[in-house]
Amino acid sequence: MRRDNNSLLFISGVILGAVVGGAMGVLFAPASGEETRDKIAKKSKKVMKEVKKGAQELGEKIEPALENVKKEFAERVEEMKAGFEKGAKAVKK
Image 1 (cartoon, helix red, strand yellow):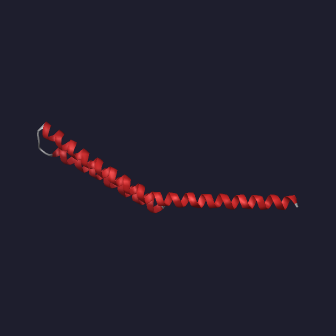
Image 2: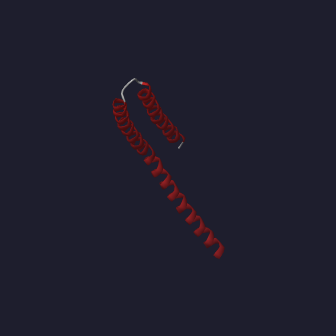
Image 3: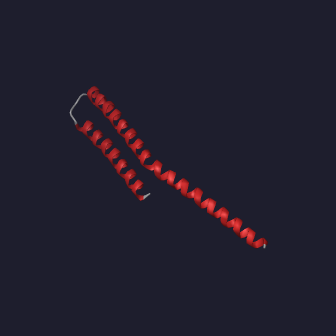
């Protein structure tokens, strides 16, 4: 789970860096208002594609871990049920 958290932090950092870097580059570049708006729109689209890609990759990484957690949980529940049943039988004797 720690590895997934590190992946999430890394992807978040990349996204934040792209947004801040793009905004700073557009804002400090000498251009007309229309050119600046066009650059912002293009950069926004690019960042959104990166965000979607990062979210998809993260989902693909997390999904197997979630499946393992579900499986482990179901196994523990079954173990507990068996333990309770065994305890109930022992009490009845």
